[in-house]
Length: 198
Ligand SMILES: *[C@@H]1O[C@H](CO)[C@@H](O)[C@H](O)[C@H]1NC(C)=O
Ligand SMILES: *[C@@H]1O[C@H](CO)[C@@H](O)[C@H](O)[C@H]1NC(C)=O
Image 1: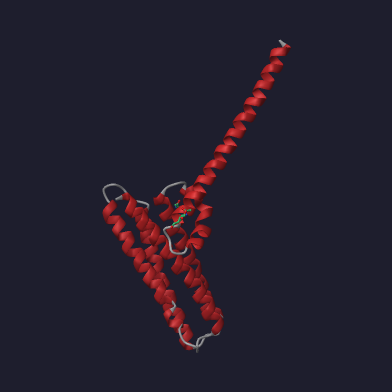
Image 2: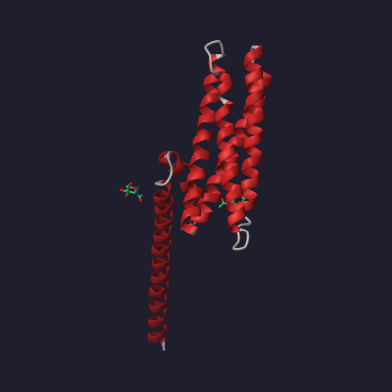
């Protein structure tokens, strides 16, 4: 009786250890697979390092879905554009800007507003893609994200010229450049998803 009890105890312990190890190995394997998927998908983008850096943290959400990859890229682009817009509005209030700088900031914030709107609409339709609306929604998303890319690109045009405030100009251009690259990456991932969906 005592022997079988000890046997059971040993058996149970080793069984539990085996299960724990199997689960751990499986989850490490899944994590590796998900991360590898993000990396290989980023191969379709122009700014690969930014792609991997911005989307690796979403790997467990994306798993191995090209659709979720494109969706997550849009989400991250929207969040970044939103943060930059907030930063620029704050900067215009707190920095002593020359009239030309103030007007460039205003134009840029307005163009960023269009970018945000186009990204929001794209995310909305991306989340509702289905068999029956696929063609229409996909073409909407491609059009809007292309427009978002144009709008954010024109944003820095007003900051050309040596008479602009050096610090503000550098700060804004750097942030806008990141949004431009994130948007370009999102568009590439959307086009890739569209191309494999057929
Ligand atoms: C990316 O593409 C290159 C060829 O263009 C290939 O050699 C490389 O293995 C790819 N990387 C991944 C992570 O798929
Ligand atoms: C995108 O953002 C929405 C809203 O915040 C969220 O519900 C969704 O899970 C996100 N999707 C991806 C793939 O990141």
